[in-house]
Image 1 (cartoon, one colour):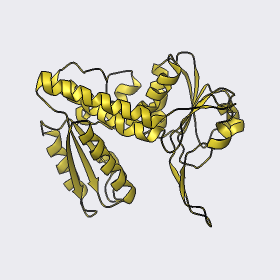
Image 2 (cartoon, one colour):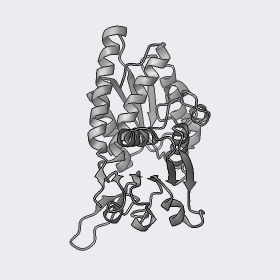
Image 3 (spheres, one colour):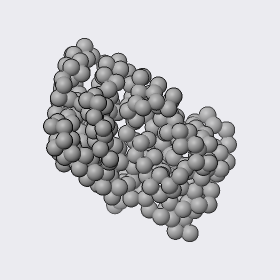
Image 4 (cartoon, helix red, strand yellow):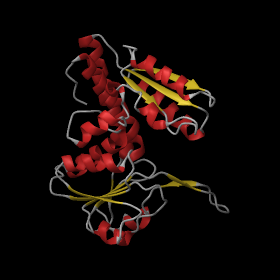
Length: 295
């Protein structure tokens, strides 16, 4: 059995294009351009790459892109002061503080200092609460991207059995809430789950988000299941082989059992940035009581 490759890169490109069209409508009909501020503290190489890509895609979509780069020595109070100034800036609709932060800064304090109406990462307590009660808050970007890919491939998700491997606040828990809202029967599995392979074997939809390379094996997968691989892990170079990115799923073996799967790279990753831009447009429209264009 050869599985269908869910092309997150192509879907994300289409979504960014749709966001760009929405921005053009907002400029033409309402005379404003959504603005996204990205804050980077320190010089983490991976964060540098993420921020550069976010800024590039924001500009590609025709939005205002503001970048704040702060030294590693920045204090928590200084960072909160910057966040507060962005909260009060009427030209800024979305605020993203790139994680991880230096050890001396409490991430939760920073996340919850961001105005919920501008929290385009969807990590603040008010937005988490709205998601868990089926409210209309801003949704975390990676789970939202996963959901869009699933609905594009499967259509109606109602009645599907879904297993999420991983219980992080960033992916696992919000992913569960989104799938519950779609009327799936949802199980969150984790490091303490007894009989994990058997739990996974029941899934029509399996979302892997554990941060462990090639963790999910083919024998864990129901024939015909749909597999969403959120993991991004770099395997070190060995001998003549260069280092490479792999997911949390053993792609080569699992792809022979499932009906569809996201690759790594080129699957969920590009969707995260595309959904960040979508969230920024959503936030901009909500703040101004403007009807959100179709994206």
